[in-house]
Structures are given as structure tokens and as C-alpha cells.
Length: 476
RNA sequence: GGCGCAUUCGUCUAGGGGCCUAGGACGCCGCCCUCUCACGGCGGUAACACGGGUUCAAAUCCCGUAUGCGCUACCA
Image (tube, rainbow, N blue to C red):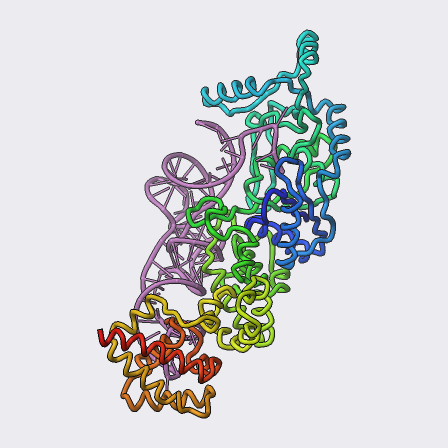
């Protein structure tokens, strides 16, 4: 098995899933998982991108057995391969200019034929002499048979047939001698003894070309499986403009690596009609290429979110606390919040554990503890909707809390419940204003625990501030 | 334009001739639980792209149409 990304950007969600499928198969079958960077395009490939891809793979928990190999470091191998192809007469030098090539393709298109380039394979000595004089260098093209067809016996799609007449004489080496993708990929798959190539469906039309190269070199092509693409909500191939499209985006948003792995596995694959939450070991054991779907799948981040929330809730409290703190530290959450912030966050961990769906939601739930009181519009509206009532219940709450000695979860609950009954309120109408009064939000950590964590002084201060603002309104 | 591939609830999917009155999950809606938002539980909503065949019987097989996507570079 192998995963062979081009280091021209971050690890795309689709790429991550391709890597995952390959990895699952390798681990399931005891095969070898090879990592290979296809960086023959020196213009676009960067070391930063390579490092990022490796980092994301590790983050996801995908480890490789061999590599990372870089095609840029294997040029002799490709040169040798091209020489062998030349010797076998499988490739030929193509002297056509870009303009000539374009003209050929446009003409074919205009005549409703396949825009297939068939280079001129024989030139006069005069022409050759002229090219040499001009310093023109040829690109080497594979001489595709005009007759016949190549059929891919694809694991997920069955037999896929390509007529040779539809396949152009693809370039295998640039005029500067550097290898091109279809050559390098084929040579590597052969040379690295790759037995199964599992990759995105976007590569399916390259496959016959790579099979030709391998056969031209006297090898036997590996088995292929082309997995369906991952789409954005608009059904177009998932990309940056769809929001979270790279593994890093998901990491930054506070998803757990395993949630991502689990969710990715379920895009285009299913074990049965019920299984959704599966451990790494279960995924490895259950996965099979035969159950991979043929049709593309829309990536629904909401589902990832739900799954992530479930995994978070499944964690042991300690593990959750550490995970949360690590995330907040890493994202720089504490940098501007003073020395006590981390301790406070640790204490708040149990209060948010059941409520979070992703780690980055922490701030919207508990962030109010780290800031002076400020009201979200909607929350303030809810108080203002009935100022008199708000003053009454918040005042009632304050009255009891400011004289409460046992300022604990239990103590607070007792006193507030009591007040609730005295005022003849229902829980919702009484407790909501209390929540808003101290957090400024409608959704937050649980109210009793929150007050305990805040402490009496700060609680009282916030109550008074809210009451003051409401009183102003009332008098006006 | 050419070639290739695909098409089951809004989304991910189960299904491979009778077990389908099409199952599950997410979303959405409703109810319940909880002295609070959330979490959780229960219920509901909602799909075989269309048209022809084949067959006693088709979501399942065949053909066509439509639509979508991919590829169509001296990118990978």
C-alpha cells in the first residue's frame, strides 16, 4: 500500500481519507504502508508543505512503514527508466511547439473528436538540424498504440475500459529531462513493489497511462482501486472555499484525531447498516475495500461535530481535562488571561465536558469567566423583554446569595430553589435570568456550578452590575 | 466538445431479484427527563433520477435519457 501526496499544500481532507484507507488496508492485511512525496513539480512543491503533511498524518495516527521517499531524490531511477523506454522504442522525442500542440487539440475538438495529441514520430534531417540550431529540446512522449484498449480491473468499479484512440501520447519527460507524473508514479509503484494502489477517482484516467509505462518496462501493473471523491455541500470537489477542507483546519477547530479518523472512514465506506462509532482497532479489523462505495460523498461537518461531542463525553474526566488544557494552551488561549487562567480552566473542565461538541467551543461556553461581564445581544434582549420580572428574580437571587455562607454547588442550589418557590416561578423563568445576569449569555456552563466557581464576591458584583443596568432602564 | 464514472430520505448510508409497507445515522419537528441552556431518552418527517425492457416478481438485471462529477498540461 502507499500514499503518495504532492507537497503543494496542506493535507486535504480527501487526501487524508485516501491515506486512511491505504493505512487501514495495510494494517488489516499486514501489508506495508509506504509514504512517497510526489514532488516532481519543483515549482509548486515546498518543504513546508511536506512537513505539514507528515505532521497531519501523525496527528491522525497514521504511521508509515517505509519512507518518506521523495521523487526529487530519485531522478536517476526515472532517467534509467526513460532510457529503457527509449531503447524499447516505447517513447519518442516530440518536437512540436506549444502552438502546434494547441492547434492539434483545438482542431480535434472542433471536429468533435478526442483532443488527442499524436506527435510526429519521424522528422527529416533538415528539421532536426534546424531544431538543433534553434536550441530546441524535445519532450519525450509515450507512443500509445492507436489500436486496442486498456482495461482496468478496478476493485471498486469493476472493469473500466479505455480505448487507446482516446489516450494521447502523454509526456513522460520534460525537455529538461525531468520526469513527469505518469512516468514517476508508475516507475515508483513498480520499483517499490506496490501491489495495491488505492487513490482518488480523479486519477482513474491516468491509470491506463501508468499501466502502459509499467508494461513498457516489462512489469506487471498493480491492482487498482479508485475511491470516490469527497465533495463540498455544493457537490463540487471539496476545497478551501467550503470551509474546513484540510486536516489542519479540523485540528484547529478542536476536533479529536480519532473522531476525524472515524468520520473519514465513514465517507464512502460502511461496515454495515448500523456501526458508526468504531475504535481504531475496530476500523482496522472491519475495513475492506470491497465495501467502498462507488459514488462521491458530501462531507458534512455537522456529523463530525456530533461524533466528536460523543467521543469527548466518553472520555474519562482526567483525560478530558488534559486534552482541553492542551488544546487551549496550544491555541494560545491563556496568553492574555493572566496567571490564574489555566487553573480556572482546569476547574471548569467538568462543567463543559457534557456540553462541548468541539474543543474550540470552550470559549463560547466558559469564556465569560475570563472576562468582565458583557452581554450578548440576544441574552440582554431576554432580560429587557420584561424588565420588571428580571429585576424581581435577579434581585431575589442576589438577596439570598449575598448572605449565603455555604457558597457551594449544593448550598447555592438549595437557596436558589427555595427562592424560586417563594416567588412562585417555574425553574426556567427563574434560572434563565440568573444565568444571563452573571454570564451575559443564554447558553453557558451550568448555573449552580458556575456560581460556585465564580465565588461569592464576583457573583455579587455581577448581580449588582446587571441589576444596576436594568434599574437604569426601568427608571428611564 | 471527447472520454470515464456515478445516481436510495436535505446529508452519510443499508440493500445485490421475493425478507422492502425500503432499514440505520446526522439534521429537522414534537414529546419526555433534568428545579436551568446543554446532555440523554422516545416518537415523527423524509428517498429508490426518469423512460423503456427482462421476469410470476426489480431499488436490485439490461438498454436509453437526464443530471452531476472527474479527466482532457513540458501539474500532480
